[in-house]
Amino acid sequence: MESRHYPVMSNEIVDLLRDVPPGWMIDGTIGLGGHALRVLRELPHLRVLGMDMDSDSLKEAGRRLDRWKDRVVLVQANYTTCLDSTHIRDREVTAVLVDPGISSWQLQDAGRGFSHNLEGPLDMRKDRGSGITAADVINTWSLERLEVVFREYGEVRRAGELAKRVIETRLFTPIRTTTELKQVVEKVFGSRFPRGVVHPAARVFQALRICVNRELDGVETFILRLPDVLKSGGRILFLSFHSIEDRVVKQTLRRLQAEGRVTCLKPFPMLPQETEVLENPPSHSARLRVAEVA
Ligand SMILES: C[S@@+](CC[C@H](N)C(=O)[O-])C[C@H]1O[C@@H](n2cnc3c(N)ncnc32)[C@H](O)[C@@H]1O
Image (cartoon, rainbow, N blue to C red; front, side):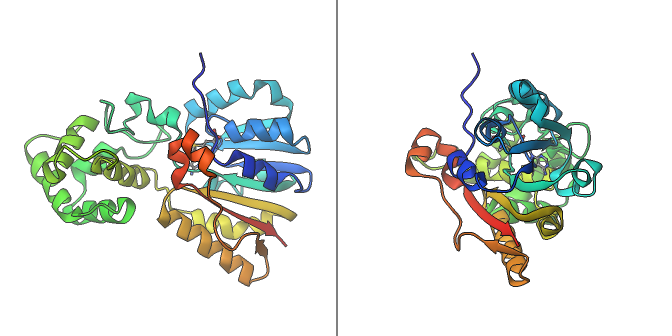
């Protein structure tokens, strides 16, 4: 049986795309194709150019979207660096959707090392064909750099203390697995937490994932170029799941608005409905920002 997949705020996203001009929607982070599937089913005026850094997710998206293959093109790519590719240049693009981070499918794959609850190698690369792993970061970066990663990307309290503990541990033996890293975190923060309190390893793992995949690199430049790529009336939809990324998106869209190149359709980010959060708790931190190209 296929596991249930919840594309976050998909009702809002489909509604916001209903009256964009006919053309291609770039789904920069197609994942398992949940949003794309709804767009293909419900919005016949749109085609989907789907991208993902992760070849496994892309394969799975291809399988799920097979029925719609006449209106879909899938490409393994980092959306932040895709705008000069021929895939884009040759198409009339009227919408862009970005829903970054990782999917629960990736999170639940122990071999990827994204979850502190599953034993696996400390990898965390979305594109397993390139780049450094979380183990490389943990075992080779300096105390100062580790502290910055934990604090800036995970808002980890006592980031300096944790970085020190990592350095002390790896002097004796490298930290190679998710469980070994979680144990180091627990030496600093303890291992028992009241119900409802998120385990501090969650923030540490998030910080490493953002660092390994350079998740914030290029987001601003990508958004700044979108008014040159999209047709007038086209829409930019960006979902963020942490405050640092949402700040970058907000400030960049406001800058484009001040230059008269886009109109932000809402003054504040849209949030998921309570019913969605009840059904899919990880959606609670989603923030959706939307702008229309002038
Ligand atoms: C939250 S999931 C997307 C779910 C998708 N919207 C759906 O409905 O199935 C995030 C996906 O984006 C991919 N991803 C994250 N950052 C990316 C980037 N910079 N470029 C391309 N893909 C990226 C991840 O590999 C993952 O598959």
